[in-house]
Length: 74
Image (cartoon, rainbow, N blue to C red; front, side, top):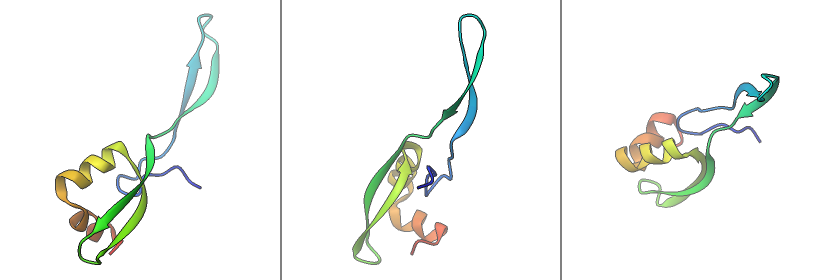
């Protein structure tokens, strides 16, 4: 499954680990994702989404119905 936030669209980024000797090895910076069950009042049911912490804050501030309608989930 792709590690992408359903609300913000955050994806893994590529970068380097740097050692004390300044060697580079490739690494991934992955978003802080979690599965969340969100109650959608307009549909009277839960929707399960994989969202980042920032996405969860957006849902809390603006409301689930408003955000999910803009994204086309309802």
